[in-house]
Length: 178
Image (cartoon, rainbow, N blue to C red; front, side):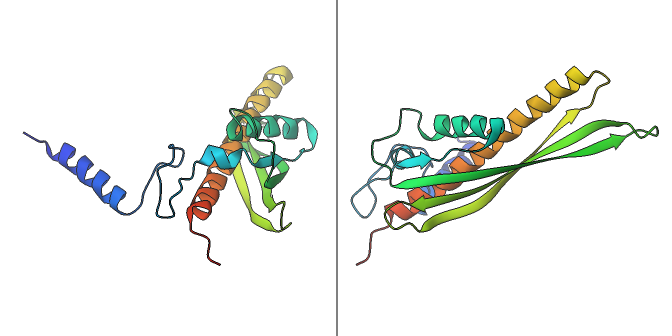
């Protein structure tokens, strides 16, 4: 009647539910402190600082879309500061010393600062590597590099969002000790 896969899946769900596992972006359920924590409610309290250059502008806009899909609240509790670093490495070099493939590496150094205390709440590095082809046509190569840059920036923005959600939802749901 029940297949072994169905039984295994149900068992896994019961075990995960018993150890306190919950989806990161799921609407809150009340925890032991009597209040639920929702990642997007906390994200609304994060102000994102300006980031230099065109890539920084794109990255900041992507973070705004990810952290504030329904807008930011009026009061900011945290500010997120990010600096971006980009490097490119040639790969797949032919015998004639002409590269045909390259990797674009985007590194974001970020810090989340509590505006009340001025202390850094969390800091870290998010990194993504995206490859692109090098063509004989300079325009094709520029477009391929641009696409790789956008993919890498999107990936780094997602990494920052997940790390902030994991940090803030677990620390906000813990009862405050006095």
